[in-house]
Length: 341
Image (tube, rainbow, N blue to C red):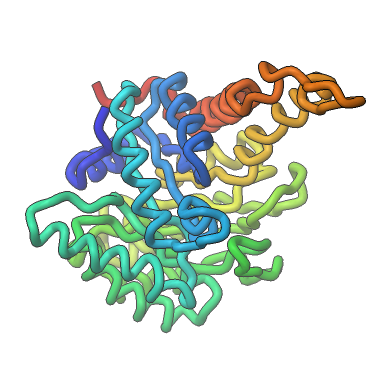
């Protein structure tokens, strides 16, 4: 199917909210990882989100070029073509843009997309994330206000982060401490700044102990019940009969099925998956090389076996491994079989 339009993307988010499931949001860095994500969504019969980080966007442009705008546009153009061959709906998203990268990446893209919309064309991406988790909340929300208006102009959805995420993501390092838990007061400040949808649609990552990176179960002290508390208290503060936030979950590696299920039950409709899919892509390659080392290496002057070192041979194994991890994510988030017909 074609990449989601802005209207279809909003419908996707509404379906997840109303159906109480979440979409896996899969980071990609190459045509192979993008194909693996598409295959996984198709196998799961789940619509989904494919996203690129600033480092991923630079890699898309060429590992020595590092042009994040060119890489983002290249990824979006490739996705638009190949996604037509899969019977699922896919949205494109730019992930984790910190303050120092706004001018040269996400904000620049959004301005370009606003010009596309003025010309009667569609934006390349359906949503963009502003990651203000490393700065003070007041400054975070001031920037978010500016970007929300730009999202309206570009017909995209803004994703924000309220609170801090531990670990490292594209060079931004967060400490693992009590700041990993968003408060109701922080959430109310968010509504005061950005509204409840009347100023433009945004989705929110409220932190509840999230940490980027790879961790064993039990290392990360998640408190997904905090999300439900914040939803209830903010709704009561504004006299609402519904949850005020569409939520995003970051840093979920090592989370238990129960923790993820409770987060989804409390309003998470998008969950980022990156570290786990990186491993799922690379692990089969390691197995292929170790099993077929005589074919992939020219040992003792031999010529090797082209069928073994052809990148398509081990690439298919990598794609299958990553696709299976995408299916697993869709199963855990409840999106299996929910694709739009």
